[in-house]
Amino acid sequence: MMLGLSLELTAEGFKQVFRSPRALLVGLGAQIILLPAFTYLLTLLLKPAPSVALGMILISTCPGAAISNLLTCLAGGNVALSVTLTVISTAACILTTPLNLALWGGLYPEAFALLRKVRLDPMAIYMNLFVMMGVPVFLGMTLSRVFQPLASAFRRASRVCILFFSLILLAMALSMNWEVFSRLDGPVVLAVLLHNTLALMLGFLSAMALKLAVGDTKAIGIGVGVQNSALSLILAFNFFDGLGGMAAVAAWWGPWSILSGLVIALLLSRRPLPAGGTL
Image (cartoon, rainbow, N blue to C red; front, side):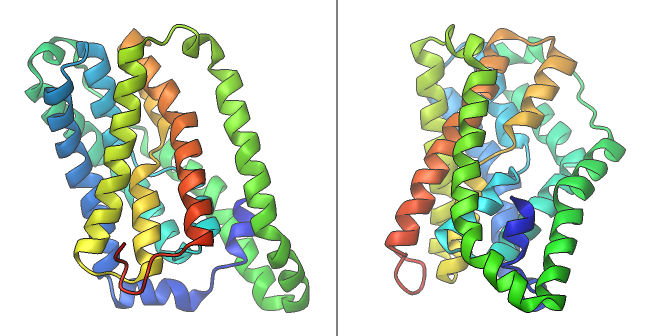
């Protein structure tokens, strides 16, 4: 999937992201600063069980998921910006995830007693980035440059393949966590739905408020709305012994965010945002 996505990328696209870094900074700010802060406010409003509140805060501190890049491609957004946001937020999560979790989790009174000191393995994070994104992006961009006719043929089919495999990923996420879903209660489901809606709104509204380009708005909106639930599950089990509410939130967030992101991507691909990124 990432190889197919990388056929849409060019070196000039990445240069443009860093040449005019406004969109990149807005995306990182919305993901690393705004989302954890507004998630904390949402927990105060909803007053869920302490473990559920901590699970919501944990999700908000995780970087964007790689599938957000694929959904951005489907939506016709700025793929180079989306990939850059994912890479930087994932590399930075070694520091930002523990800090944000300690800050916002520590401010939630009932969840304070459940907090644990979280530490991410830098080598594991960087190897994941290298294998999941670095290698396929390099190969795809090289293929696109060296074998242009072949790349063009693949590029025409890449979005259909991305949609197909996104549906497979959604089905896998549902089946792998079905036991957890069968035990979900209404408050957890509602908390995840509202939290995901909040994340998507923060991404889109942050970009629209600063009148970013349409492609950038799509990339930021989807990037902030689709968090790395796999990482949050790993952290929930490694540091919190699979605490019920935390595991339930992380397990439900994954498939739901893929579904909501996929629906939004397909809607935006058919009905793009007007010029200037405003609705």
